[in-house]
Amino acid sequence: MESCGEEAEEKEFLAQLISIIVPKVFVPPLNFAMVEPGIYRSGYPGKKNFPFLKQLNIKTIICLDPVQYRNEDYLIAENVKLFQYPVNKNKEPLTLIPQYLLADALSRMLDKANYPILVHCNKGKYRVGCAVGCLRKLQNLSKTFIFAEYQKFSGAKARVLDQQYIELFDVSLVKYDKESAPEWL
Image (cartoon, rainbow, N blue to C red; front, side, top):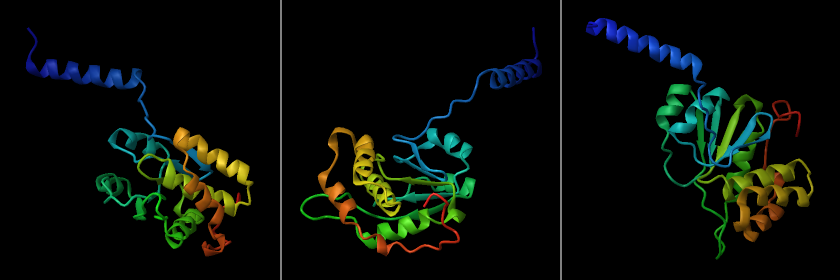
């Protein structure tokens, strides 16, 4: 009969062996994608996504959601900066994302000192889609490309109001330092 100490050692040995043999599973957040080197987009990350984000060495999170941020423990543990912009979705009758808030978020996205950045909203569709669309507008990409990318993430529920918002967004509101801006801009 084994003693409790031997049994505990055997369990520890098996746990270590399993951790070596079985690869870790990294789960990206909903609608996760790279926007440009140093910038990622997604839906709201949960605990199961933290190991994945840790592998990316996320330094900054930009949250485009009006709900109080729920992942403070992760931010503290990983020393991640949070910039929260309490914006609602664009919807009729004329509830629009304030341009000055999105311009400020874009300014932070264009500062390499904040990289790598994760930009997210609840599902990673509409508000993030507007932010990425306006970033693409800053890059002088075609409306065809911008709207195709927006629709790729929003799916069958693409919002015409979001596309109008992107089209009418005033890029001159976005202030950034050319010295700290990414090369792809």
